[in-house]
Length: 94
Image (cartoon, rainbow, N blue to C red; front, side, top):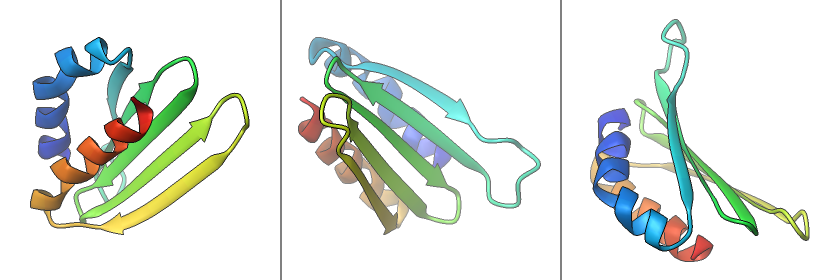
């Protein structure tokens, strides 16, 4: 899942910038029992953190910085389902 997340970010960085989204990726601590990584996407209005674990878990956390609305979704995914979920999150931010 971490490789899929990294590949998606690399393939979509130009599109994200064109949509006015800043992006960054971080890896979780290596000593944790479930390896993880997350991508932060943000613009002036919304912040989104998408966290994936190698176990197939995925959290999508979106915060509206103006209204302070806070949405969190938890998913259990096969790696092939990650890309559509990431694209859906970008649509919500654009």
